[in-house]
Length: 338
Image 1 (tube, rainbow, N blue to C red):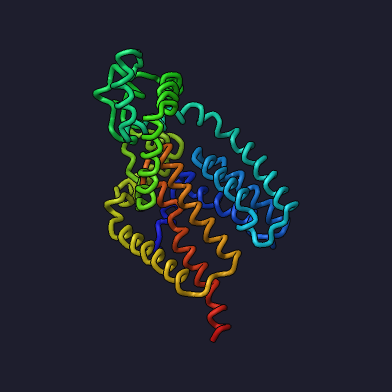
Image 2: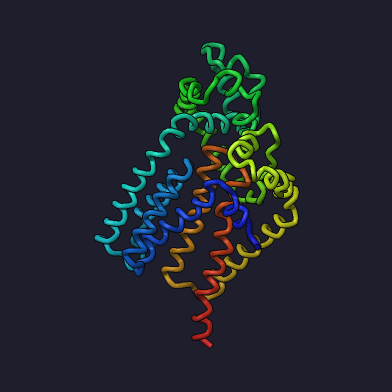
């Protein structure tokens, strides 16, 4: 009720699997008391979660690398043999999860990143310098390139749709431009700076309602429902989402409450960690990994795709969750001291 979590779980989107995947990694490596049957089910959830969205691949791999590097500090009951086995299994599952993501990744990753470059200004700067010598298709529409990722990706007037029938046909040119900006020091520095700036922005953007706009009679969603589920057409038309009641403006009061809860949670966590007795090592590692999950989610999505409330809302509820875990861990200690 007090976070955006219900709106994340209620969407027919892969975002719910971001948090599930992060929690499975935490369980696999930090929970030494888990039963073998439960562990294999959690492995399955990890595979499912990593397969659900392209952004999960770098997020989960980075988390695994952090655990690998700091394994002795994060895992209180560290056992080299057990850790090696778990790490090998999750690595193999990560490779398997890459297979269903390989096709969408091949046809879309260059377009998403190009949209990011259009928004942060790197694309225009590069084209103005390169176009006199190189004949990219984008040079013909340099003055009409959208200055935000959303319009670049989805607006019908975007160069992606005016110049190419499908995203995959833009791969050669877009990949060339992206590679050249990454190899040139002055553009690489801008990429790094924009990545840091965008990550900081993403950390404070997490309102519910992003992507929950209505689908009119011309939309593919409406046509698909009418064709495949005609008996549900009227319910679809009368739904809250189709009447604009699940968008950001309609959820203004709820989002204010969400932000207050997040702010209070952050303050209380800092107070507890600064002035109260520290939690046990397992809880400390759990809290660290939850906050790393939030940070890496923001870093990957903001750097490679876009800054949007949807990506923030899917994990920001880790903060009040961390507060509840911390309070639950300290209550027995306080009772014992009294």
